[in-house]
Length: 354
Image 1 (cartoon, rainbow, N blue to C red):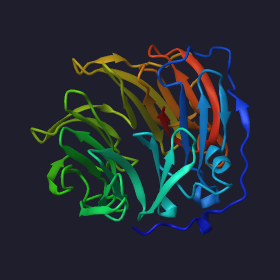
Image 2: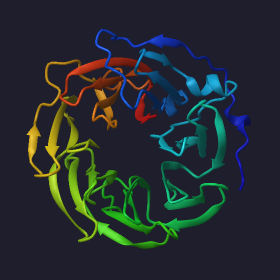
Image 3: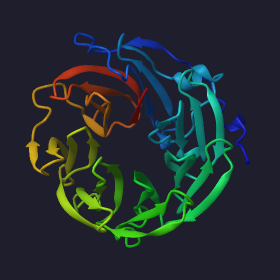
């Protein structure tokens, strides 16, 4: 397997140890006592990505843990949300064509692969699946990192989810604005041999996918970022159909509910309003249309995730339309009460709990 030499990624880097910026209400330690935040940086402003580690027990953060633990090398350009599996953290650096494989215990690089525009990683049944923006899903052997299969799925595949023996991949056709005519679908792959089994038709520009315990997939179809709003669909993989849930931009699944952030922008005034909703997975009904009321709210949320204790973590840029300042991670209890806010890096986009 061809490995990428790190010469092009060497940068002078520093890492600071800080406390969280709002430490007055630190939560008790949960089963996910530590976490890693992936910060995308800003490719067009020459700001590389970074990893921030946070200890939820002490509130201590390290703003650039990757460089600090790996001889000052850079994480690269536009890293995407990471995946934790079997003690390894997989970080796809999209614009550097690198998949980093990091030891979760030490934050040191265990290995790396050259991958064309990697977007997301799923590790399942001894295989590493990588969605690549060139229209393929790469499948590697987890132990040897040898390429097993490279499956063509459609233009600009992005998010993935697993249900049973199948891997589902959203096909966005995201560069084909404004029609996205070759998107509108989710690819279905067989995990055992990475073969393409077919497609499920959905709505415009599908992105984030989350698989629930009952075997359904919740999908965010992002529309055209204008006249056609972003919406959440509940997809039944067995029946190959879907139902509409609500308007929404980002989603996260907890044990019994779906959390939804809907970011709505009026493009005549450039005003953006964020709505925080929760839905019952059992009844498909709205539980709350104002989950985060009267608490510190993210200025520009760009991801939401839940840990094993159903606590909620939202990454956000520092301010609306601010793409170069360090952002924040907001931590809420399952009932929406604010626990803490942490300084992280530029454009945080996802969290790994370990």
